[in-house]
Image (cartoon, rainbow, N blue to C red; front, side):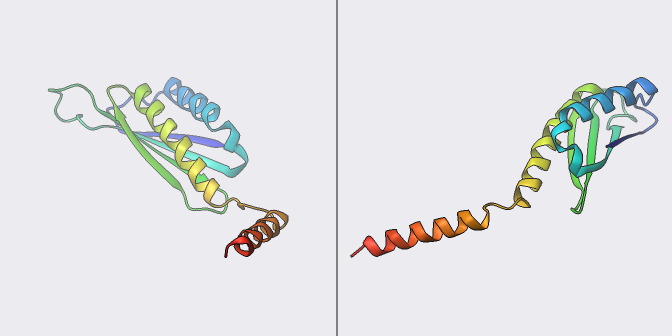
Length: 126
C-alpha cells in the first residue's frame, strides 16, 4: 500500500509528517492491505488567511480499492495529527462498509439450507 501526503503551504509537510501519516495509515488499515493500492492524504489549513481563531486543519483521505471506486473521508481538528487520526478512524469504517457490501453474503450451500428451512416454516402454517 502506497501512502502519499499532499499539503498546502500553511501545513507542515516535512518528512516527519509523511512518516507519521504512513505509520498511522498502515497500522490502522493493515487488515485491508490486500484490497488497497494507495491512500492519498490532503492536509489544508482552513484559517490560513485569517489567524484570529485556533488552527483548523482539514484532512481528506482517499483510499484506492482494487476493482472498486475510491473511498473518500474528511475530518478537521486543531492539529494535523488529530485531523489525521480522526480521518483514519472514519476511513476504517468506510472501507469496512464498502468491502462488506461487495462480499458474498452466503455460499450456495447456505442459500439452499435457508430455502429449505423457509419452506418448512411455510408448510407448518395453516
